[in-house]
Image 1 (tube, rainbow, N blue to C red):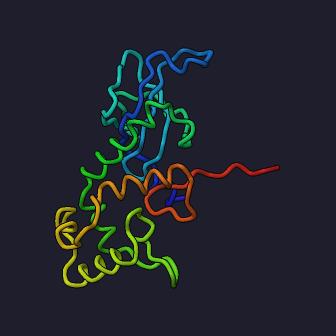
Image 2: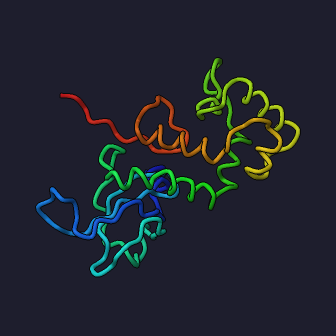
Image 3: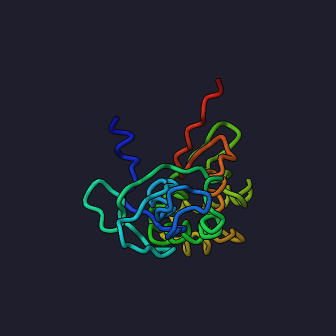
Length: 191
């Protein structure tokens, strides 16, 4: 039970705001689609009456008194996002990564093997055996201190923020067996 409590999101970024709700909805209440900062959880929320949210805005969604969000309606899958939310998603993820740089740089400092053939870092698009070996050798000498440090010491590595954004989106779409950065959406049982 403590494990679940740990995974609750405290803050989220607004990735879409529909002031009159979804067009096909019988109940025209305002709806916001959000992405959590901790585990990149996709959520649908109802703002407090009279509150207009802006795309890219950071909102408190924790257990305490919320200033802008009245209710977390449900957890969403990637496919349940509006097109606007899907388009904003990479920007929101990049914003979360940049504001928590130390946490994400630490992934490159501590990630280990998944099994005897594959390393966790190889799950990031653009990191193959050559980059993996360069990252492992560089972190042996000295831990990475920032994304800039990482790109300066590992030659020809793509932008690490972009790599992480791409990985988060792969996980949110459910296109993987391994989840490093997100919480997998529970699969519906087939009856």
